[in-house]
Image 1 (cartoon, rainbow, N blue to C red):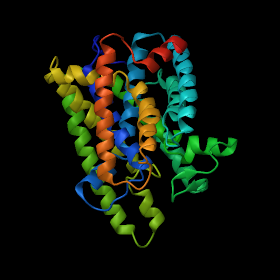
Image 2: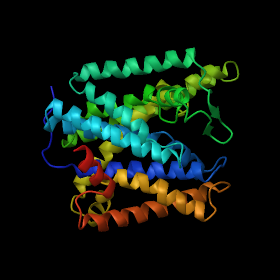
Image 3: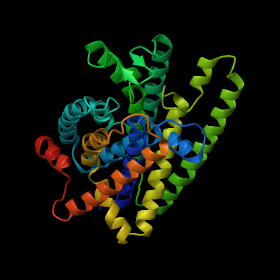
Length: 351
């Protein structure tokens, strides 16, 4: 059964979207700027964002899809979602021409497959997540994960070939459907909780933090026991996003739960404050801002000759400068328009 949900829009979800967006910009600018480093607090912090920020973004997409499904009949939800998936596929592939680590064309498949999971019970959704991860594990042992990759410069040689594209999309791309679909399914599961309830919000923070720490400790112990004797097994026990093994999925989901719960609490606690009113419009326009950070943000970096050979500090500064500018733009835009420009186009074309 679907839990009762607040009839009003939860500002905390918009805040969480913006937080996840900021994390994604930092990670993507770091990749585009070739920012490398060893040791140091900033290097470790930005490294911790890799895969976690994008995972939170996908979980939030699942939450949004689940909430929408509670307000529309299933046939209408499927029809609209498939059209929006087609829209995301087109603009995602256009983005991929500029930045190969684009996530939107993967989103298209997450939504297309996820919408058919909406009628399932919450318990069945858990089994779908288990099945998706089991399928990926089988693929990981049966196929060569390195096929197509040049790990020196993170390019995928066969991305624009039919076989390479499908392999990248479903198995060994930056955000492959197997197992990243799990994040969207987890978001749908979360949407069935009463997210407006402070007890649920606190539980998300507490459980998310405990699971994240326990998962990290378990990963550390397992890797320490096999490292040096079986490097491939050590990779399976890691929490890095490449390849996205089970412990990485658990890390991503726990961080997403923590961030969502914390943002819901903060937004409710400081509802109406100047900071919340300033930030949440950006959370409502993350699709526009995501496209902008590739076209405008990375375009500016290219014009300034900053793509490649930069420091982590410079990548973080550039990321925060872009995100601050994006938040200002979104606030100004929201004064006259209800939706961001890309969101408005998608709604006009896909409903």
